Length: 231
Image (cartoon, rainbow, N blue to C red; front, side, top):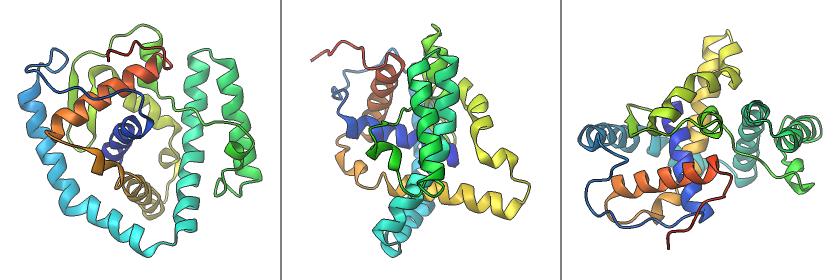
């Protein structure tokens, strides 16, 4: 479920960033040869989200003061900067890696473990990198679109990047099961709560909308924004 929400967060980023518009689908998409199976998996994931994750996220957002919700979100983003740093190093981007390092130090020390995002206020803009993007940076094509059970939108390439990225997560190094599950569960709820407003932007066929937004977002990120606008 954790990776499902992270994948949805990527879709939310695509919707909110305005990096690309979502065209109407004109039939079979060559990037989605497994559409029938993908739609079945998508329906399963949506059902789980509807009966469990979304209600928890709405309840969390309702009872949590905004300043506390923002602080918790910042702390999870601060942990995520470890993944960003690792992948910027693998992509040989020294400037971006330097920004990631500075953000980690400033937010962890001055920002009280990342509760306050002082790095952004100091002009250190957050990067968003993962191992799927690293594989794309080194020339591996995305492969077909793929909806993973519980994990959500992906491609063959991005699916290969999930396991390596897990080494940047703190859960691997937490031996207390209850603490590990609590931290992981809160991350799911926090990420889903931050997508509640983004989902209002979805129109028409939800599957097609999310697929197109995801694929365009990933292309935009792999190419660092150097993409040709088709419209």
